Amino acid sequence: MPGGIVTVTMTVHNAGPDTAGATLPDQQSIIVLERGYDIVDRPPPFVLFEPATGCNAYARETEPIPGLPGGGLAYLFLYYFDAIGPGESRTCVYRVRFLPSTQEDFATDWLTTSPNDDDINPSNNRFDYTFVAAEPPAPVAVPALSPASWFLLGFGLLLTPVFLRTYRA
Picture 1 (cartoon, helix red, strand yellow):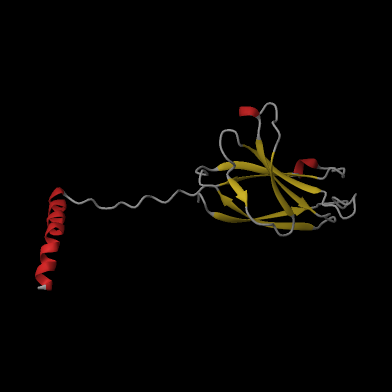
Picture 2: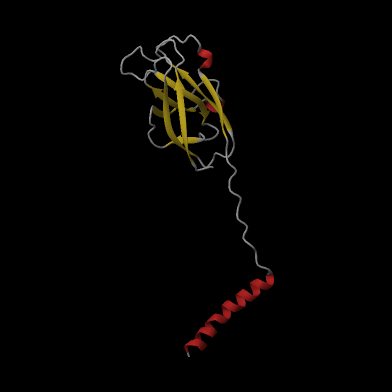
């Protein structure tokens, strides 16, 4: 729902044969990059509003990128993970708040990379998915009064002071 909060769980798995992201000690070198959102025409669909668990999650605005429409400014979401041994996984849980402008479904993807590793199968490093926007709640119809009802209501309001004086006397 626009303005709603959603919890997202992302699991990154290393199929091996080597440890991913282990070339530099104590550095989170596995990066999951979400497709950038063009923010020239409209705001991003959601914002991160609290720290993630299991990874470090950041949102950044890019410098102008030539070739993108409207001047090329994009909003990126990045998730950093610790090294993952062969056959192991890491899970990141974070919450997003959808902006009120998010009214339509949108397709996006996550792309996993580690700049310090040689990946023998980079074709399995991308996950495509779609956020499905909920229908905004239908407006509640308030019944309208007929002209005769409006007349009786107004007449009753005019007579209210008369009835109050009579009642106090």
